[in-house]
Length: 125
Image 1 (spheres, rainbow, N blue to C red):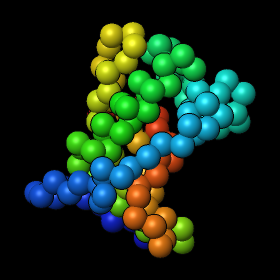
Image 2: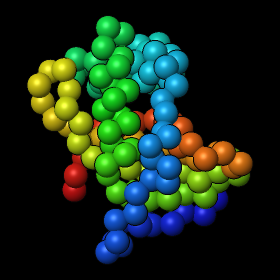
Image 3: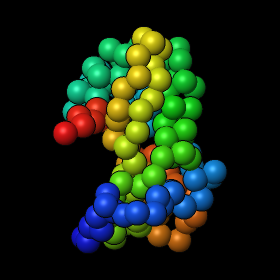
Image 4: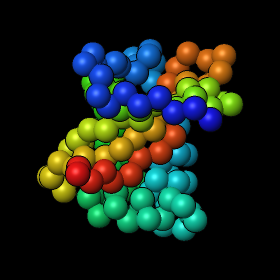
């Protein structure tokens, strides 16, 4: 696996084909907001604590897509499955506060549309 650091670039690179980016609904319901998923439950605690839940999935989906379409790429990671893109930015939440998250997207080999993989809180250092 090769990682390409882009954080010090002077040109802000955007996610390729960001207008075609998508979030699979089950990625939100069965992972990011799941209280029982082995990896997702910690993320669920974070996102649910901000007011995201099954009744407002569209709000979370739109916040993630907005990041993908408006924020610069922080890091690119080459994998056997395709290119992963790390994007960091702020989202508005149902609780009324704005938080900074790190999101990961992939453009699978042979595909053009970026697919959402995960998101987590990001602490600015």
